[in-house]
Image 1 (cartoon, protein in one colour):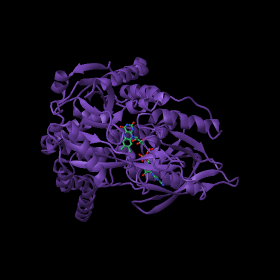
Image 2 (cartoon, rainbow, N blue to C red; image 1 turned 30 degrees about the horizontal axis):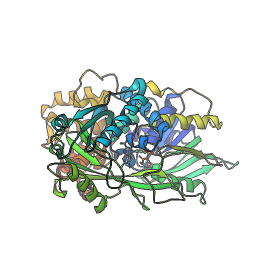
Image 3 (cartoon, helix red, strand yellow; image 1 turned 120 degrees about the vertical axis):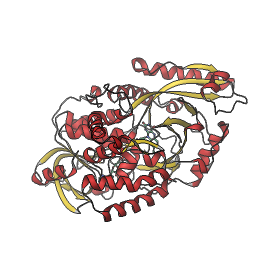
Image 4 (cartoon, rainbow, N blue to C red; image 1 turned 135 degrees about the horizontal axis):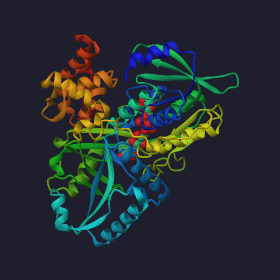
Length: 519
Ligand SMILES: Cc1cc2nc3c(=O)[nH]c(=O)nc-3n(C[C@H](O)[C@H](O)[C@H](O)COP(=O)(O)OP(=O)(O)OC[C@H]3O[C@@H](n4cnc5c(N)ncnc54)[C@H](O)[C@@H]3O)c2cc1C
């Protein structure tokens, strides 16, 4: 992953007609880019910020069928997602894991209801099941979740789903796309669409936000994979196009692991607003969420509302013996769901199906919106299939269902460094050359200087938050501690990438302002 090398190649080939240009570097965009390059199509992906800055780094980190969607009767969606869950755990074993969940229950009616529901969930997962659901009595439930309130507890239902590191998954997908010959650039905003003499879209105008240079790229088909921003790209195509997205904000709080004291996750099946709430162990901490708040503003850095934070704490406190307070929160992150707008009931978001939608405009813009992280591969397959059916591309078979993303080094070492896939060997070499670089960079984080050096060399970070928010997850895990290591990380970036002192100071200042949104 080398940004300047890819830009030099682009400059050389500016007049070339590519098969596919993808706008958006989240799960949807990278799913499409990987599907496209592995079918042998020339592929260019452009992302206006860093890869995964949008919703795709702010999920609940579940690779799941969606127990909640089962309650809504959306069985086809659950079956499709359970199938993709199985494929994702097989294809990305370095970033995913089988996670045990416990639903604590305080009435026998609920025990019967959730037991039956989860048995059905198991059945739907078929051959790709991650483990059987079963009932546990209250003593065993407390043994597994020691911070759970005991009064009135009847027991717990255990079930399995997948868990993953969402932003690292994007970095892995980006590396895979680039290794296979695609070009994928961060900080490259698409500013307009180009049409040919027949009024069909034939390319994009884009700006490199780092150098402020403008480019024009030509292609057979443009895929709009911009999540909550999809309408703004559709308006570049047709300024009169109707709004199709209703953003809904979801917030998560990160707490110290002592609030769960368990390797099992907890799922609260019914909150005051009729949703579910998860408390999930993640990178030595606990992620608790989420909310579902309809919003009008669309931003790359959405901010949690006080009422959302209070709602999560209040719900957690109903179940936790030692309740978390605002001062215990290590980080707060918010993300926006790109839900399809429902003109007859614009306020309702939790009822809106999480299924994706693919549309093709009259001038040929292919848009893919909605969906789930878990189904990114399937969404991509359908999107490229639709582009082929529409005659933009010749027909070729999809090959991603068994494409391993872990790299050849997977299995050599099962430790934490596996998240770097084939980068593991290089990190070990950096530590061999300088053993002190193998020590954790901060007492609250497991990652080392060697990892930061590797990230700078091989994972294309441009700004300090690219390292601290998405390539390591420091900002999301502990926002204050991440601000403490910002100067050291800026220094490593400057040494590795050739920046001066002024750059370092400006980066640290901007980063510390950003952490304000996470505290
Ligand atoms: C709170 C929350 C929790 C969730 N939890 C889960 C979960 O646990 N499991 C699950 O399966 N799913 C989950 N989801 C859903 C999942 O995260 C999303 O469906 C998915 O991340 C959407 O990805 P995307 O690529 O479509 O959008 P995004 O990740 O937002 O990517 C779109 C990208 O397009 C870029 N862009 C926009 N305009 C332009 C332009 N003009 N030029 C270039 N680039 C542009 C943006 O910068 C952005 O990075 C959750 C969603 C939310 C909000």
